[in-house]
Image 1 (cartoon, rainbow, N blue to C red):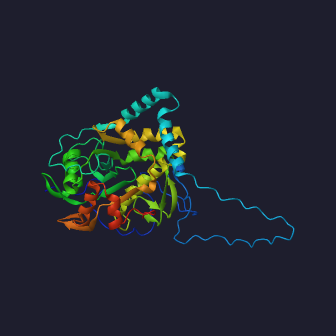
Image 2: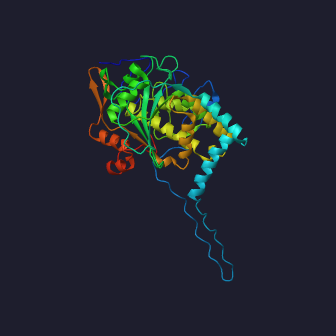
Image 3: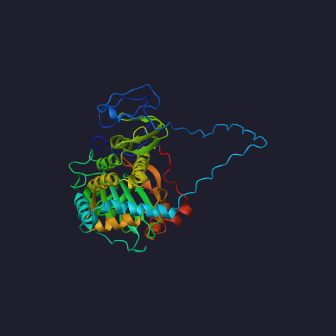
Length: 419
């Protein structure tokens, strides 16, 4: 039996915390405090440029348009006014060609094949590699078409891991987030399924425990074995991202747009309602907040998904794809932020990226693994996974039929506005 207790400044529990009474000033300089929109209130910060106003206040009220003035009557003999024809929508095919061209452009950098090779070699050298060793147990058979991919994406936080969070050391690293990323064989959709870190599961060789104990006890091989045993889904590749590395990716994009529907605060964060272009430091504080959110760790998972979605949206935007220097900065930051298993070469990563150039952000769907909420196991606060809906979702992933499963089950996907 593996048990997890408090570690560092995080108690490791999934709990519901009531909002803190009244706004608080930050107790350290780890998280930037954002000022309320159109408010005279100011906070002190070591970096004045970190203080940003909201792009626009958030409101649930329906949008209304100003009353249009009555049209002037045309007098006899007066020539009528010519109306402008509405603009034609851009062709979808042109958009796809444009995106593909832009990605190729940054690889070539107007310098021919030699420059493309040099850039690829540099990006490849940025990526940390780790071995998967021998994954025990009877691994699931591959049922879906070979073009479909299942990638285990693990997020760690250097605050709660000693040393390099991407270099596993027994009982020194913790996984704050685990996501199974399913890339459909036809490349028309990507599904990201978050598994709560406090999910109570069977860990081979250790008995029942929270799922994040698998990584702490046995690193990538044991975590993959645990998830494959739980889901019946064959994991093809694994990536590990430190949240501080994701911060650098955000800054390379010039920040990302995130909406906070309602003001939230805890002892370290205060986010007034509004839409903001957050830099990496601000976004990191946004996803680290758990206390003061109505649903605790579940809301934090959604914020993690929301941040990833915002980064993807900005990276796929016209402003990034048409700017080779900006795109190159993002690729440099992204490759430095991630560690990949040594069986996933740079050519494979590049091929996957190019195969997804026609994907729209709305084709990337974020789901939380079906569960029945929190519970207690001894003195540990845990999450009980749904043993009815869960297996059907994992079977759909294994068979590359997630779109059909979503149509029938209609789960709560990540909304446009995240608490």
